[in-house]
Each structure stands twice: as structure tokens, then as C-alpha cells.
Length: 80
Image 1 (cartoon, one colour):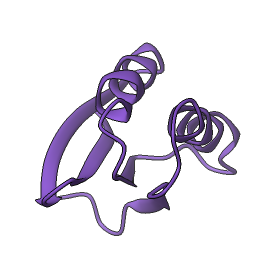
Image 2: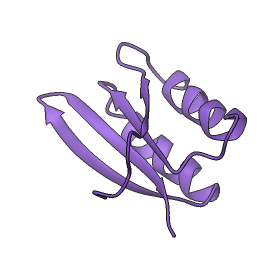
Image 3: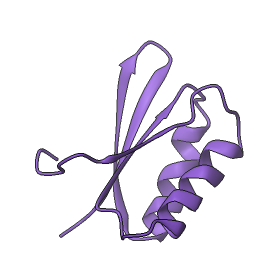
């Protein structure tokens, strides 16, 4: 996803379920403008299986990248 200029960043490191998912949903649902991309940083492994399905229900695609040991970036993006 090289064409996503400046995705919004949501840092939920240090938070445990359900808060990473709830904060992500709030960001997706209540953004002033529709988001084309959102990067969620998390260090809570269960978030990797709770955030993507909720984002997909809202029409977002998802890519997960391990940025360092025990820390992930979940990129949510609107498909064109």
C-alpha cells in the first residue's frame, strides 16, 4: 500500500482487550473525514484477531506487519 500518504496513526500499545478494538472502531466510525488508511500499533496479540474482522465489517482491508518482537502494525485501508 505505497499510495497511502500519511495514514492516521493510532497507538494502543500497553492496552489490553477490548480497548484496542474499541478505540480502533471509534476511530473508524467517528473520524471527521472518511479514513483511507489507519495504522494501529499494538503489543497485545489478541488484538490481531479482534481488530481485522471489525474493520472488514466496515469495508476496510487489512495488513499486519510485525515491526519488532511482540509489536505489530495493523494497517487498515479502504479499497479503491
